[in-house]
Amino acid sequence: MATYNPKSSKASEFINHEEILETLSFGKENSHNRDLIIEILNKAKKAKGLSHREAFILLSCKEDDLNEEIYKLANEIKHKFYANRIVLFAPLYLSNYCINGCSYCPYHGQNKTIPRKKLSQEEIRAQVIALQDLGHKRLALEAGEDPIHNPIEYILESIDTIYNIKHKNGSIRRVNVNIAATSVENYRKLHEAEIGTYILFQETYNKENYEALHKFGPKSNYEYHTEAMDRAFEGGIDDLGLGVLYGLDSYEYEFIGQLMHAEHLEARFNVGPHTISVPRIKPADDINPDDFDNSISDDIFAKIVACLRIAVPYTGMIVSTRESQAMRERLLELGISQVSGGSKTSVGGYTEKETKGSDQFELSDHRSLDEVVDWLISLGHLPSFCTACYRMGRTGEAFMDLVKKEGIGNICQPNALTTLKEYAIDYASDKTRKNAEALILKELSNIPNEKVRELTKENLEKIGQGQRDLYI
Ligand code: SF4
Ligand code: SF4
Image 1 (cartoon, protein in one colour):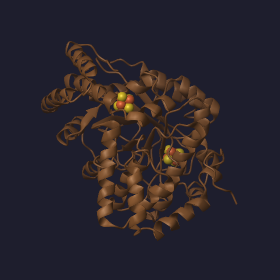
Image 2 (tube, helix red, strand yellow):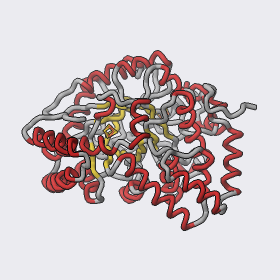
Image 3 (cartoon, protein in one colour):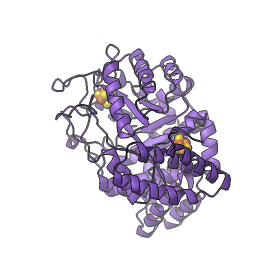
Image 4 (spheres, protein in one colour):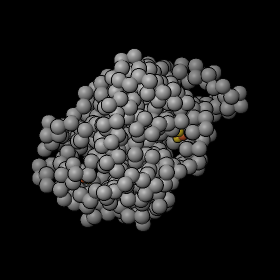
């Protein structure tokens, strides 16, 4: 039997099944233990994070007034670390060819009903121009695993194409990559291609269930998949994005597993996850969420987000358009710091009408990017198209040190204002432009440091005069 060791490089030791089971029963036994819950809440208020066991006690808490405190604290921590900025991005699907057998994804290798498609470099150009014309600056690349159709050379060429497209005032300034687990050598190539975050969803941390849900293809190897972030780090990528697909196994198991993974990255590399995504399983072609017995209610989902925010205060948290407007609104108050907007989840979706069954999963939020930006403003958030950190060398440990010490809101805020100004001038509808301009004025006066305030003011003026891409 493997023993729990967060520093180990072995999946069975850093995501340790026995430790998860013990944590599960410990949490359930203490769900009404007010003294313990209050003690953990007091520790959480210091905003230094919590262990998986402590965080699970909060997730298990069945005391209504203390749950209210958890929600309140999650909101406070989000503001302490990131101020009120919300970063925007869009996914870009390159290819739905895939040789894996993920039972919850319509792109799985045995699905004969969906049309398979891979974008040529010319088609990528068209997609990226369409995305630039919406105002996007930050993409998450998605591709199935297929060594013939989507080899690493194809991904690298696509990244290069994307970074080199300059259309009107548009540019994609950060390409995050979500492709299958691969070798250290390939991660090194991705690093050299200057990707932003490498994102890999674990799907489920429960090995037995993982193996049942991934019956064929390279992804069926639980260890290879679970240890991928370690190889990515060895390949030089130090901004890593975790995620599970809530609904595949019990949410409690996944929650604990996700935090153990974060602890492992901290213990082994001194760098916690750059982001955590929280997708929930959705209907799609050849997929029925009812086949997975672990779907979770909105209330539980909200609590997961709040407890993750408290447990890893320094980590960006992402919610996609899988969730409805109402749910996204609720989660934004509980610690989410990045959202997608105007997303298409099919290959070629930004220039072609999506046909039924062509998308990877059903979206619940179909609004345009402009509507999402205006909605964020109306809720008191500050929409941001910032990509400054990795371009300033603030990645990995350097980024974490900065965020852990004082939060990064004082840097996010000015960059959010300048990128929102660009958006307002270049892409916004009249209504959104007016609202954005008013918000920029208001938020500018809220920048506490006088020097930074003056510099931001100058940058905003320069953007008004036609300059672009000014950041600190
Ligand atoms: Fe392929 Fe990814 Fe879908 Fe699995 S989740 S079938 S690896 S595209
Ligand atoms: Fe993200 Fe850094 Fe920009 Fe803040 S300043 S929004 S952390 S890239």
